[in-house]
Length: 566
Image (cartoon, rainbow, N blue to C red; front, side, top):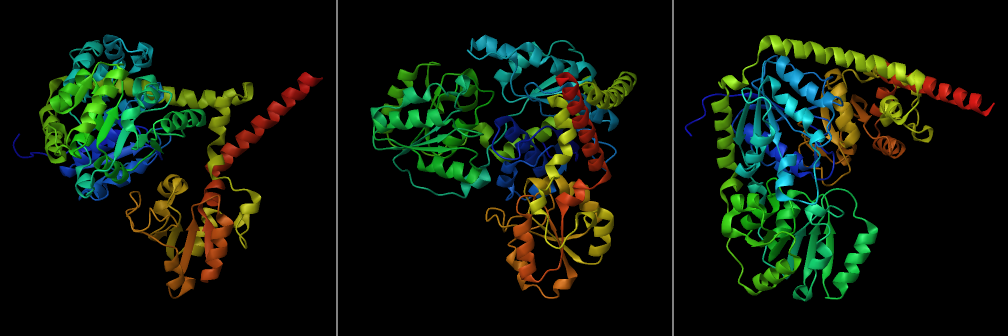
């Protein structure tokens, strides 16, 4: 592939979960890490900093990824005037406004536009899967190819169906394949002996992710074993848990249900397990089998072409939906000796980072992806017009109809609302405005208490107003780690107690649930200057505007109900 010839400015745009795990979002973050590893300038434009981003903190260039938070993907600030690539991370049932925003940003920055392809509806149809994906959910993705688009698939099998699906603009569409590597740096740092344990990856209530197959996979061959069930995001249904425990109890199997596992825990459990059951009926790539092989864990999967392409004969296959066959294969594999660790071709982080760089090099001069300036400027104009139209009609809608969509729009400020009994002692609400607080904290060493969800939302709005001296948090999982947003090491709040000259310190609380408790603790530390970031943002002019609109809307709704009663 040769040595790297150019440093690119790349923006990856897409929604991310603040907590939990999503395979597609994880894929996008790994892409950002690979691009940063090759010394590119990488910007992740998203609505949340994902919890799993911390799993890559040990990578040398992890801190070079700049995360920009936005709610609507239009109102954010980025100093870079030109970009080389804008990569869109799609979402099922994604809104047209999001895709418009991604395309508009690419046009405005003169960037080539790319789209990560996880799956297409025709792929589901070809497999005759029970779960279907309506084509209408993907129509807006097809339109993105109108002005030039690089479709990045995870495997050759995925690419085959993508080329068939994205056929409307063949002169403006280019295809390539890039498979995401695993987090090998974390995996390599874990040493565990094999135990009497197996693992299962599934999603409860989701047929195509093996949710309906799990209970029937339990059997006598598991007797006396521990079964670790990784169930993805969200809380597991209580009825399912009870049913699973009763079924496992018949065979003396100990069940452990895990969700939102970080990479360290995941690889630790994989290295302890003798076998991985992966009863997924459809995969766009299939991360768990690749990770299992890397950890020396045998793995049984349904016979899907994409899994054969990625892992070859290293996996044990049985026909899709053949639960009895998977049980028989599991019983046989558990009798065999443990296997050596195997790094399949796509698992190697360094190799895949170079391959991704090669893709950017090849397509940087691709004429198919070159923008037609006249057409793109027209698209940009239409996008801006639609934005103005949406804002105007949203305000008009408040006067006509008080529905749930309006409530969500109006309640943006409600995120920062603090209950009256949570207002810090000694602080008047009228004093918690930026204009007054800035004067009081000027020249002081400023610390922020709390680096959770509120911090992620509020820090980008206020970071230009102050120079941050440090971040403190009670969460032991965060202490000692560098916060990815601020790039500052998170410390235990006890450090504030040990500091001298307490009058030169000011603490901003980015927590709306425990304001009183934190304020009381600061008083014990001898720190007099503290303020609530949530309250300061709540009293900003923009927030007041939203609350005023909400009150008007509520009043109109009340008057309308009274009129009906009469």
